[in-house]
Every structure is written in C-alpha cells, then in structure tokens.
Image (tube, rainbow over all chains, first blue to last red; front, side, top):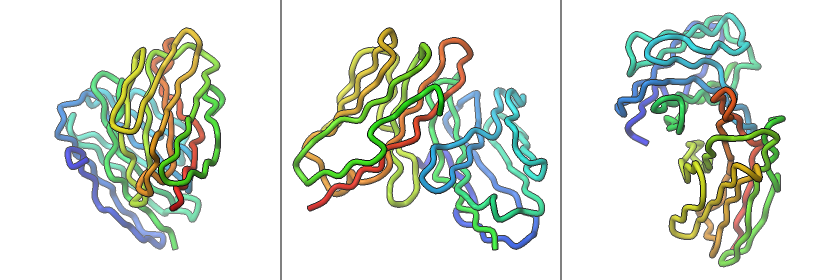
Length: 110
Length: 109
C-alpha cells in the first residue's frame, strides 16, 4: 500500500531515542498506531481523529504520539526496552471504519 | 481477543485444495475486515463487509451480523496464499475494532 508510507522500515536500537513517521495520502480522518508482536494480532496503541487523540490505550510512557496534521502521524520512542521489539504499523481509516495499514516499521531492540 | 474467536489457529493445505476460516463474535458487530500478513510482514486488505458476501478471485467472504460470524473461504489454494490471516470486527456499541488471534495458513506443493 504505497498510499500510506512509513519510515523507517527497519530500526535497530540500543537505548537511544527515535521517532517513527507515517503519512497517508488517502484523505482519511482517523490515524492509528498499532503494535504487532510475533504472530499475535495487532494491538491498538493510539487513535487520532482529525488531529485529536481519541483513544490512548495503556502503553508505556516512553511512547509519545504526535499528530502534526491530519495526514501525518509520529511515534516518539525514548529509552526502549527489549519488550518493545515488534512491528509498529500505522493505519488510517475514513470515519473510524475500514482500516488501511502501512508497511510497518520493524523495531529490534538490542 | 475476547470479543472475537477465530478458528482454526493453524491450517495446512495442499495446492489446489480449499478450506474456510471463521470468526465468531460475542457481541454485535457493525462490519468485518479480513487481512493477510504476508511474508514481508505487510497487512494486506482482503475484504471489508458490512453485510452479505463478497468474492475476489479465489477468495470469498461472508458476514452475518445477526448470527455473529464471518467466514473466509479459500479455493484452489496457491503457495503465495501462505501467511497469517486476521479478521477484525467493528463493534456496533462503541465502534472499537477487535482482532481475531489469527490463522496461520501454510500451502504446500
């Protein structure tokens, strides 16, 4: 899905700080961050609708979302933990309905 | 998740055969989506249904909100169909999206 771009694709971190970026070119109102570990289902981390944080699921405080405009979404990570190793997917949807996922960022914590 | 029960958890098919995946819901869902996570790790949209059935090539999906289930049928399976399939349903009560635990499909020659 080239209409939702995520960067970087792969990320290997020690205990550094890093930001994941997502941009959607679909004109959708809602944007999401999901975390997927191994073959488990995606778990919702954050949901924004029209730049407003609608749902902030219970995630560690080292993950901080930012939505600078309705087409962009950032996820700032500080002092990562080995349990954070996973694929982080950005998704968007029109009116909180059908989900469209980006390619994901695979985070590996050393 | 608790709201969505997906089965089977794993499935092995020979090329050219078919089978069905199923998601049962404990509450009324407004719509359902089916995804495949491919070998590259991408989540591919397969179907989005608010009711009835849809067909796309060798895949067919059905959703019955009243009976609280959805199915995904695969026919004439090919090697590239291998991957993990997830259903995701949107609850009518609060619009939250709940994922099934996934079905790991392996298609063998």
